[in-house]
Image 1: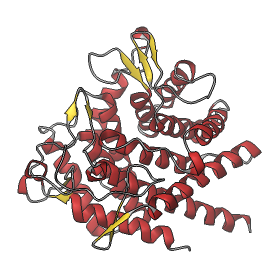
Image 2 (image 1 turned 60 degrees about the vertical axis):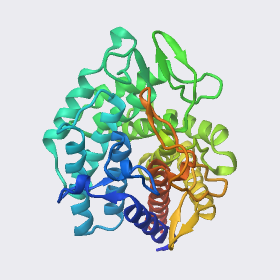
Image 3 (image 1 turned 180 degrees about the vertical axis):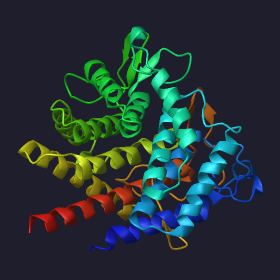
Length: 376
């Protein structure tokens, strides 16, 4: 097996562990990701912690456990889950449905792949996401509670979770159909951000494409309903044409945007590993998705900084990363979103995306080798 992507994923994991993983408030048996490096005193005491960033940190730990199962990493996964609930005031839920969907996805994977089961948490989050469905108000599920903004970043991951957990395939299909009918740009075939009080919010973000790819791929694999695979084919082609110049996924800076490209890479990898079928369109979608993941990963790696032997990734994978300092503006939670640090490389979100990308590159490489074996 080609060890290149294994080694790079190992290095990315080690970098985040070394710079960001810390006990919550010094409590034994806990761990969260410090949101900035170099860290301020406020960061070290988790004055800010960003619920959905921690959900993606958990997802990355599960990726690593899938790549190389280790008892000590399983302990890290348990500590991460325990600390998440503690820092969230002893609760699994918050006011943002997209946040809860990301945590639900990572908890489901932690149970299925790492054997760390939190069934009560999954049931609670499942109920939140199921009960948020309001077609009579124009949804979809809303972005957050008491809100009329129905968007792809909430419906995409919630739909993926509902497809995987508790066999709620019909609801997941309704969510996919709502996105397809409401949020697809007729010209580019990309996914618009959402719909607010009946008006289209026309912003197009990479991770919106990613979560819709994930949802449609999951449904293509689980239902064999013939409407899902063509949507995957169309969206992979659109992403390739409009959001992956030279084969490299477009960056979105730091703060919350730091996670966007990594999420896109995760679900492009899911297309490679999970989209069923052997039609020319199926093969082309998987090949294109693999090409984007591997080209992005090579570019991100080539443009990294190295600090004490470990990689530091940039928010834009097609240009050299900068070394962050503790000086300057820090990432802050403002109006429901986290803006970026003055040097975005400082943000945990950016480094998680780099790690996610290295795990995605490893996953698609393994899938390619397995295809080769099965064809011989």
